[in-house]
Structures are given as structure tokens and as C-alpha cells.
Image (cartoon, rainbow, N blue to C red; front, side):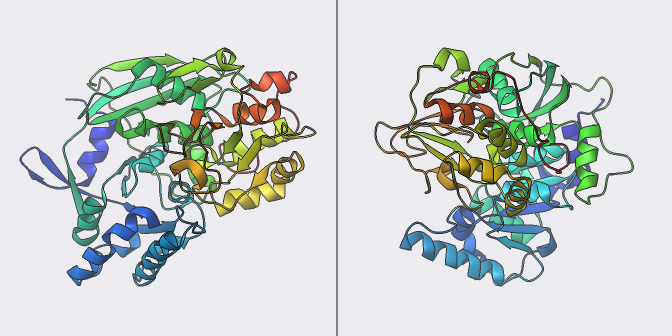
Length: 428
């Protein structure tokens, strides 16, 4: 039977079978401080080194810098542990683990990737099978060199339509969520996405889209590699496969969904990412904070969009604009391009590369009754404090910061995007 891309990648990584379960070799294993610290004692008790240290990428991004003594001690425990693992790619304080993974030249199409975080699915934008696992499963995989799983139900997703000047990957993700709603309980899904948009989504937008695959209930969200993918991989110094895997003709899927790009930006209304409305329907919602950052929205495209909208304008009185680049490389590029200068001049506050308020950790937590519009990926009650969070693209968040309420980019920039390309990073 003709195979899907998901099936072909899995088949290339199978180390064994046990009934309906597959034993799967991984190319990369991702760690971060918040969940990695949970496995330290048990892994040390095993008294053995990792099976494949060179395949481990260890970031420290959640408690950086720590906001409490308790988190400082958790972080130190994790840092001591990873420093004692020779041969791993240890990248503390360089940014959010998911962004470091996709920036790494070693990651690319056709790979199988696991990580101790649900948004590991972000790397699926490169055409890889990437999924998040619990700390116990990661502990096993570190020791054994493989993991186990049941084959997922694979669905095909086609994105199409002409992309407007302010439409980004976050809008594509919200358009999909508006159609699908929450995933059925217990679902084990893989989405294979084909980008037929004109022009195609940038790689930064694709990372945002794939990251939101976790909110769609997808264990995997991979995009079929194309010329945009290849340009990105080669520009970061990676190797493009001589014969990249692709879905076979007439591959059998568990359903197909075609989603047109929205004509106007979309916003997810609390309490869930799938409660989606057009931005114009929410124009009266006052905000206390605007946040541009996280593994869904802290990339160079997002910072460039924000700079274009904020240049020569001011953040509304009483509104906090918090901007946190997703990685040190993004931070440095935004500095050199002048994007951070535009953001600061407008009254924004720029933090160091880290997760920030996305997981309710620090640097922008909401108080009771406060409202935030954010580029982050989840708006479940309590996740970012005691207030309410609306999810949107960076252009909408930046425009809202200026307006003091949820606003479309065209309201503050009626002539469309202005000068400056979004940096030198490939595909952005």
C-alpha cells in the first residue's frame, strides 16, 4: 500500500516490534530544565551513560533567570546534571529549546525527534517526525537509545489561498483550530501538511503553525518538505538529503482537510485556543499587556513585524509590551537589524531569550482581572496568571499594544508593512 510521509519516516527508524507497538530509534532527544530536572535522580541511579550522547540537545529556558529560590535550585540541579554528560550538545541560556533545535544544522527532513516537552512538535515544520514525551519516557529513551509508540492515525492537511500582507503562520494555525476544535480524547494523531499558499508560508510561520499542532491534539505535525524547507536547511549549514522522503502517490490517509488562509487575522478567545474569532470582532477588548515571544511567536519574522508596526509610534499609556526573542541568535539578529531599537523606542520591554510568561513562569504574569494578547500557544485558565489571554500573531499583538485594545494591523498601519526585510535568516 502506498505510504504516507509519516509511515515512511517511521519505517526508516524502526528498531523492533512488540505486538502493535513499534520500537523507534531517534535522531535527536531534547531536554530542558523544567522537565529534565525530574529525571535527574532516576537517571543517575541507573549508573550508566546515555546510549547516544551526541543525539541529545540540552537547553535551559524555563527558569532563566530564576524567579524564585526554589526554581534556582531546580535549575542548578539540571545544569549540574547536563554538565556531567560528556558528548551532548549542551546549550544553556541560548534560548527556547524548540528554537535551538530547528536552528541546529544537524536537524532536518526525514528525522525522528523526541523531547521532554509537548511543543517538540515544532520541528515537524522541517519535515521531521517530532513529538513530546513525558519525563519517564525520555529517561527510558536516554538509557535505551530508542523509544516505543503505536503508529499514529495520519491525516492530510492542505493549506491554500493567497496570503495577505499581515497573515502569518499563527493565523493559519487558528484557521485550522477553528475547523477542528479540540482533539478527541485519547486521539493519537499525525497531521501531514502541504503548503499550497501563494506566496508560501515562511519557515518562521511554519514553525509557529507546527508548534500549534500540539493544541490540535496532534502527536506529530509535519510539513511536506519543499523549496522553502530546502532553502532554510541549506542556509543554516545543514545537509539536504539526496533523496528526501515524501508521501507516495495515492497514499491512504485517515481523512483530508483543506483549509483556506483567512482574509483577516484571527484571534483565539479564552479559555481555549480553538475559540477563534476574526480580529475585527474583538476590536473593543481592552488590554493591559501585549506579549511577543515564546516558541510560537518569538522569531525574527515576529520581531520584524513588531518593529515595522511600532516604528515611529508609541505603546498606549498603561499597557505593558513585553518582547522576548526565542533564542540568542534571534536576539542578536534583531539587535543588528535595529528591530529591538524600534521596539524599545516605542516603549516596549525586551527580555532575554527564554520562555517568559508563556508557561506562567515569570517576566509578564497577569494579575486578577488583567487581559493580555500574546503570540504564545495556549490560553487555558491559569496558564499565564490570574487574568485572561487572547492568542494572535505578532502583527496583531503589536498593533494592539499601540491601540491599547485588540486591533488589526491595518488600524495602525493602513499603508501596510513598511521598510525593511525581516532579517537575513533563511525563509523568513
